[in-house]
Image 1 (cartoon, rainbow, N blue to C red):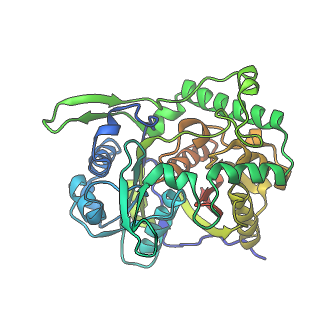
Image 2: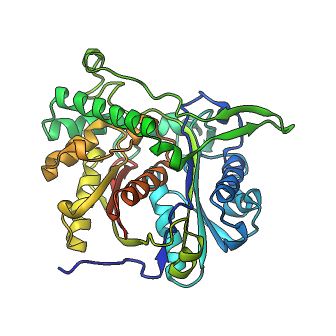
Length: 398
């Protein structure tokens, strides 16, 4: 099979027009007390200003989130108003795959000719997530209450099992070793702190002031609050919640936003901070695995993606994964006989947390920035979602 060189030939991501907030852990910052949609729109306005992109260039807005927020019904049109640019748009939601899916939807809009510059804005707030009351006439209780974040994490209606059960199932299927999983988790944390110390994270993360309703500053979001400094001894001492799963080998809920632009090739030349850097969409796949085996789904998606594109892992310069469990990366490494130390070199969601909607968007931004620093190449991004779904995409930084 020949290499698929460009999935959306007309679409580009202009280098350096992106930005992400830090991801403070659940209830750990002023983001716990704001309308996250309004905050995200205003934050994107600041990012565009910092990147010297006139917001008048935007002609479409794709937003993505998974947790209900006040006035969510209005979605993209409302957020465009918060951004200060009244354009049409749409909202995307696919659990933890949302951040990448929104980027691909924007690329399709540009490639189809209906947009020249589409903004992508993804966000979520796990803090104080709402509870819903649902009429259920077929149920003996007549109504059902659902805590959006915690109940969905704890119960897959297709299987009756929790997300942590998915991880334990995968660890047993692949006969993973607890010692290796602990070592992998420690490596991921060390990679994050190394990227932080080098100044790399400061190139993609933006500090934001959070205001109250009177316009006064309630606080500043300027750190991935909740990131732990582990030792191997400490990780090995943690209680095993399921096979190879401890509090140190899984992510934590957090809040945040991330945004970027998808434009035509010509518009990218105008807006990019480095016009010589050409970022193209190569391909993407989405798969489902067997029920309650979510951590293996990204590896299966990557297998299909490499088959479709004719590429091999040795052709990839940057590998980034959404890894809510360290075993996600262990399964991938085992399936491909790949050194897990070579992936997620600038950080990952295992370490800095998981606000769902913007998680894969931040990972993509980090991956593209890392590839540009290396002089270009293919960037592989993968993630899991909603029980047994895997998504993967390839980008080329030239």
